[in-house]
View (cartoon, rainbow, N blue to C red):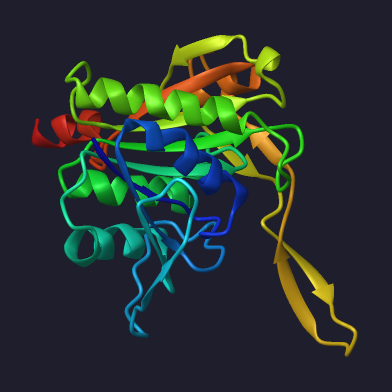
Length: 250
């Protein structure tokens, strides 16, 4: 099996190292990731500067490249120019922090996996939702094992080609209550930007605010992950409102 890995936390992030080591037993692992943090980049592509791919050493990877672009840039460039053969699956992560509900619209992690899906490949976006995001606390090893299991299932034909968004909760393996298949939920932020003043008296704005999680029937990724279960959500890029479309035709 041949696997392409990317992320949005950057090629030197803790999570991508754990993922590469966790998947190397499956076959050839290639890594194409941003040279710096691209969290929140969404599915943006770089169009104002040239992209450069610098080959680097990364434990667990047969070859790895640091790229001065977004996660979508990295996957697109790797598939079109860098990897010697088309991989069997694309895996993006392990993200430091959850990607739940409407977070996925902004998520560079999900965008990296989605770019692989655009190219006709099964893909996985995987994140840890620990009590202390932006640290190395979290079920990274378990997340890598979950990603490896789904890679095997794709490769063996047990699953159709799709994009899976996976969120692994907790700080320790015993915190995880199980795994559930979910649909995308809803979350938003009570205050988007906070106005601040720098030491020279200049005004700037910082993205912050409290997270508000929507509630539904209990089977959304948000509710399931916050209840201690690993959430697995199949995604598609078709955002058409089919119900309204049918009414408009009528």
